[in-house]
Image (cartoon, rainbow, N blue to C red; front, side, top):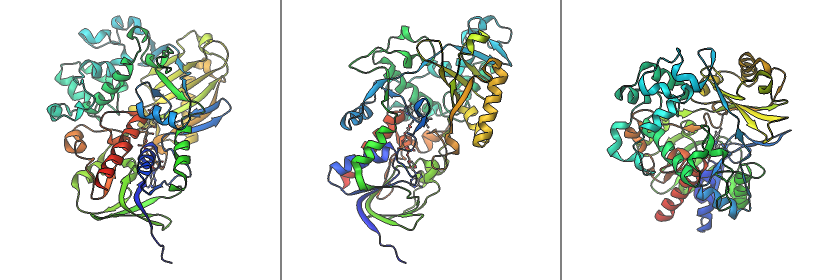
Length: 469
Ligand SMILES: Cc1cc2nc3c(=O)[nH]c(=O)nc-3n(C[C@H](O)[C@H](O)[C@H](O)COP(=O)(O)OP(=O)(O)OC[C@H]3O[C@@H](n4cnc5c(N)ncnc54)[C@H](O)[C@@H]3O)c2cc1C
C-alpha cells in the first residue's frame, strides 16, 4: 500500500550524541523534530556493555575537564560525573621481536635513528614528532588556508624535516591517526591542539609520568577530575537524552534515501516509512551516509567528502586479570608492540594486588588490520599473541568482551580522518548545507574532539537551522 509521509520541522538522521543534541535544542525552540536511527538503541559510538565486572564502555568513556557541552548535558539530565578509575600501569616495549628498555634505547644497537631522534623512545616516535612540529595555537587554525601547505602526511613532513628512514619506520607504529601515509598533519594537529587545552586545565606537567598520564591525575578542580566518567556507564547520557526527546526518537529506521529540494527534504527508510521535513540533518558518519542515495542539486564538494573521507578503527579486547601475572614474569605490566596486537594496557586496581582489568588496544594500522578477522577468530588470535609475548599471562586472563568498530555494520569505523590533501579539497567547505540538509556528526567538528565534537556539531546545525527557519 501507499505509506503516508509523516511531517516535521526537522528530520534528523542518526541518534548519536550529535543528532540528539541538535534535536533537544530545536525542540526547546518549539520545533517538531523526528530522530531516526537504524539501531535498536540510541547512542551510536557511545555504548556500555554489562559484564561480571560491572558496566563497561566499549565506545566513548572519557569526559575531559574542558567538555563544556557534555558536562552541561549531564548536569541538566541529572547524571553524575565520577573521577575516572583507570590508572595505567608502567609500559614495556616489545619491538624487533625482543623486549626493549626505553631507558637504554639511545645506546641500543637496534636503534638506527640519528642525532636527537635517538633519545625518543621507539613507541613514542610518531606522537613526539607530531608534537614537535605542531604550529597551531588556536583551536580552529587547522582550517586556516595559511596552513594549506601542511596538508601532507607524517612521512612527507619527516622527509621535509630531514628525519632518518629508521625514525619514519618507527613512526609507522605510533603515529596518531591512521598511519604515516594515510592522515593529514592538519588532522593530527587539530586533535593534538585540542588535547593540549584539556591538559592545561589544571594538570601539572610534572605529574605526566607516562604517555596517558593526564588520565592519571585524580586531583579535583571545581569538583572535576582531569578525566571523568559518567556513573553507570557513558550510555546513561544518550539514554537520558532519548528519554527527554520522548516519541520523537524512532528506532530500527534504516534510512535509505534522501530527496532534497530548496523547500523540503524527504527521507525514506528501508521499511518503506517516509518522513518529510522543512529541514533535514544528517548526523551519520560518512561511512554510513555513503550508502544512502541522495538526490538533489549537484554538490561535488559534499559528494567528495561523503564518498572519500577515511575512517580510523579502534578494536579492543577487554580482559579480566585473575592474578597480576607481571609479578610472575617480572616485566612491566603494560606494553607497546610493533606486532599485530598494538598495546596491552594493564589497569591498576589501586592496590597492585589481586584482580585487575586489562585491555588490548588496537588503533592505527594495527586497528585496520585486525578488522579482517571475525569476532571469535580475532579473540583467539589476540589471546594467542598475548600468550606468545607474555607466557605468564596464560590461563590468567578472562575475556569480558571484544569490540571492533570497523566491523560494526552501523558504524564501520571509530572516528573520521582526513587524508593528505583532504583539508584543501573539501574540509573547509563540507559543512555548507546541501539545500535543506545540514551536516552534523563528530566528523564535522571545527574546534573540539570526541563526544564534545559531536555535541559541538549538533549545536552548530541547530543554530544554522534556527537562523533559516
Ligand atoms: C572505541 C571508541 C572510544 C572512544 N572514546 C572516547 C572518549 O573516551 N571520549 C570521547 O569524548 N569520545 C570518545 N570517542 C568518540 C565518540 O564516541 C564520538 O565522537 C561520538 O560518540 C560520535 O557521535 P556522533 O553523533 O557524531 O555519531 P554516532 O555516535 O556514530 O551516531 C551515528 C548514529 O547513526 C546511526 N546510523 C548509521 N547508519 C544509519 C542509517 N542508514 N539510518 C539511520 N541511522 C543510522 C547509528 O546507529 C548511530 O546511532 C570514542 C569512540 C570510539 C569508537
